[in-house]
Length: 492
Image (cartoon, rainbow, N blue to C red; front, side, top):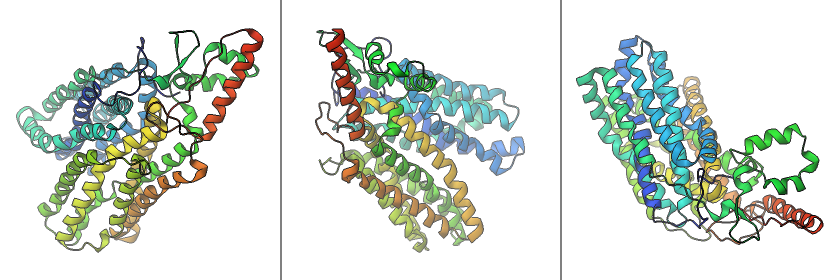
C-alpha cells in the first residue's frame, strides 16, 4: 500500500536516487513552504484592519488563521489519497491554484464569514494538497540525504517570514486590503508553476514483479489489495462482504494497514502530543513577558528571537549525521524531548534576558523538529507509503494543534498564571519525545532487516501477512497452473 505517486504512466521502478532530480523537488518544496507557511505567518498584518472593517472581536478575527492551520493539517489524509490516485504533480499544481483562488475570491468579501470560507477553508485546503504532497515526494527521492532535503525545503517559510510582513503592509497601504489579497493570490500561484518540478517517481517497493520478464504490476502497497488474480485466490470467502468492499475502496487511495502497525500507532500518539504542546510557548511567551512588566516592543521582539532561532535550527539540522543505532526518528525524539525539557524550566525565566535565552533555544529546537519529523515519518511508515503516512500523522497533529491552545488557555484561566500553561506544554513535549524511544523494545522491532532501498523492513505483523499471502499464492499456482505472484516486502 502507500503511494506510488506516479500518475497514469509509471516508468521503470528504481531505488530512491538520493539526489539528482530530487533536489529540484526540494526546490519546489522550498517555494511551496514559503508560499504556504510563510504567507500564513504573515497574514497577521491584516488582523487590525479586518477587525475594524468588519467590527468583529479579536477572537472572531483570529479564527481566520486558526482555520487555515486546522484545515491544512486535517485535510492531509485527503491530500495523500488524491496523490495516490492522480499522482503527486497534478495534486501539487491543483493545490496551488485552489489556494490562489481563495485569496482572489476575497476581493468580494462582505463579511468575516466570507474570509473564513475563502482565506480560511479554501486556501487552507489548497495548502494541504501542495505542502503535504511535496514533502511526501521529497521523502521518496532521498534516503541518506533526506534530512538535508527536508531542511532545505522547510527553511523557505522561515526566510520569507521576514520579508512578507512589510511587503503585505505596503501592498495594503497602496491597494487596500482587498487589492493586497489579490496580489498575494498571485504570489501563491507560484506554487502551481513550481509544482511542475515535482516529477513522479516509481520505486521498486511500489511494485510486484511476475516471473514473466519485463512485466511490472502496481503493488498492493498502492491499492491495499493484491492484483485481481491473487485477490480471487486469497479472498474468495470475502467476495461478497460489504466490509471488504468498503475497506478496498478506502485502501485504493490511502494505506489503511498503517493503522494496524504498532510502530506507526505509537509514533502517531507521540506526534499528537507534540501538536498538543508545541504552540504553547509561541502563544504565551509575549503576554507572560508583559505580565512581568516588560514593555510592548521588547516583548514582541521575543517572537523575533524565536523566529531567528527557527531559521538557524532548520538550516543546521540538515548537517546532522545518521548513525545505525541513532536514526532520524531517534534524533526527532531527542529534539522534541529537549523542547519539553527546557519548557518545563521556562517558569524560572523571570527577567528579559532569561526569557530571550529561552526563546532562542526553543526556536532553535523547534526549527530542527520540522525536517526531522518528515524524515522520521519516512523511516517509520516507509518511503513508498510516504503520502499515506504523512497524511495520517499530519491529521493527528492537526487535532493536537487545535485542541492544545484552548486547553492551555483554560489552564491559564483557572490558575491565573502562565506558568501552568508552560508546564502543561513542556510535559506533553517531554512525553512526545520519550515515546519514540519505546520503539527500540523488541516487541516493536521488525522481524527482518533485509533492505534493498535503504529502509528498515516493516513490523512482524505485516511480514507474517505477506508470508501467508505468498504461501497461498504458491499453492494456487500448483493446482491451477497460474504464475505465482511474488510479493515484495514493503520498506519502512
